[in-house]
Image (tube, rainbow, N blue to C red):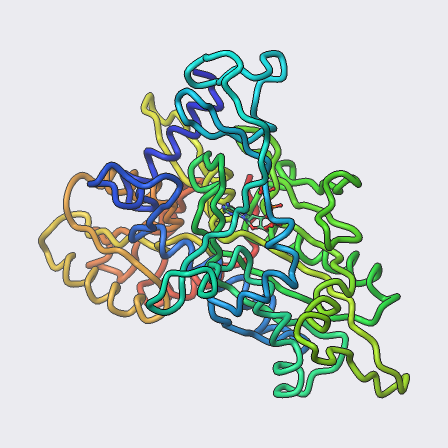
Length: 444
Ligand code: ATP
């Protein structure tokens, strides 16, 4: 096995062992490409979403939030082009009945099934739609078919004018949303990189036609800066521009932000110039006038849309992969997640050195104080070295130890995860110490 695959295996195993991510329905053998977030995973995910919401909504006057339903009118997906275009070419094996994506087949062995090896067993390619279908209401017939949304964006488009009027926004302005999306991916894999149920963090920015290129540049820059603010290493990130054969049916221009995963450079966020395609199509299919009246210019037009679309799970995987490290310390391997304090699931571990002399009481009091601001973890059992190592693996940036000196002068030791440096800090200054380190993390 290559070192790169080993690295993914180690991350998957750490994620399970420490309660970041579990296979869905594991006791039944699991269900392919669906995952559950455990206690540490959900904290990490919440922190990523919170950082995104903060940057995209709270700190901006020109973006509003939205939470649209997953199930939408079926016409939405005709208008959006998903019924027609959201497909992958598939072939089936007539012998073993396995199904493959055409682009995954070996071009040197045409017609041969990669699974059972039978020659001339593969059917012609057929288009397979990636949307999950279900029925609304008690009657399972064609008229009642609805889709699980494959992207959150459409909920934003159909609400664009509701939001604009309710919030009195004017073009240029944006709508942001975090929510689940579903794709019946044919070749899921690489852990949570490609799932069938996942979460997206999408923002659609409505601009005047002609100003779209300028806004596209602006959002490329903003989104890269945001990804860096999560503490990712700059050398592992790059932009990739979509060539003409990669561009989606709606896009005039598209750039991916890519990360160098152990399995190669891959997208985890896309910035797209969707032109007036979406609102134009919804106007056509709904029969509603979706033109914007520009008061300054005294004319109506369909706004262009610049979209920033990040996968929440994929961003989380990027953070985990980037943070994972093994170091040799005093002859032993130390596994450590160098997560930025801003997104780390637990901000501090609190450790009385021994379970007597009043140390646990001081520790519990400190825990109760700190938990008003931060997610912290109290642990009084086992050797201190082991307690530190458990926190290193969980990505906890600070270890606070109460020792005999605490009893004399009311100070504690704060051990920093990455440098392992220890500093003595007064008990009543611990919260400030942690708060100060929350932003501005740069990975060494
Ligand atoms: P890919 O080429 O990897 O299938 P895409 O180009 O279809 O991705 P978009 O439709 O642009 O992706 O979706 C935007 C973001 O949503 C992606 O950058 C990714 O982070 C996330 N995403 C898309 N599909 C999945 C999936 N199956 N599992 C997890 N995240 C996904």
